[in-house]
Amino acid sequence: MIFDVESNSKYTGTNVLKNNQEHLYKNMTVARLVAQCAAQAVNGGKPTLILIDELEQEAILKAVMSVPYEFAHGGSDVHQICKNFNEGRTMCVVGTAAVSTGTNFKPLQATISWKANKAGTKVKQGAIGRSTRIDATSGKTDCKIIDFRIINVPLLKRHADIRIGYYKEVGEVVYVEVGGQKARALS
Image (tube, rainbow, N blue to C red; front, side, top):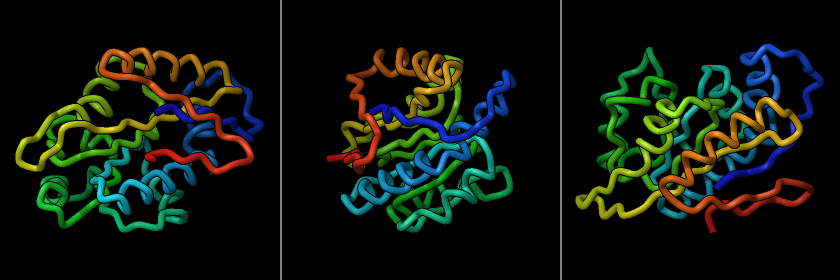
């Protein structure tokens, strides 16, 4: 599922990292959508993983999240967090690159990617790799992947369009325009 969102940032430079930070990572519309999707998934009994690029995103998310989560990053015990998730003690994990490879979130049913990657290996090992593993023990047979496309910033729109191509390799892609109404993500 791709949410088409606009940026309100005035930044117009060509620095890719700064574009990501100003238009995607600090975008409060995206942060609220991440929190809304996570709450809807967790409250619906769907174990959820939120993938982020920078520590500052978690600080922004903390202010708008309504469900508890564990934060997996370079300074945390990622193995224990993954174990808690797999055993059902944790329903939601927010993770940096510390969870992108080598972690197996078995019952994962919703992956929210608040990342700006366009590289195939990062997208396929990140959101797709975390999501598409079937797990007979937990009964997992599918997983939703949620991502965001900043439609009024050509650079970020292009990068999202590349990610969408990878998502189409594993399943159907649904688009949700975000405007004045609340979008329903996991219904």
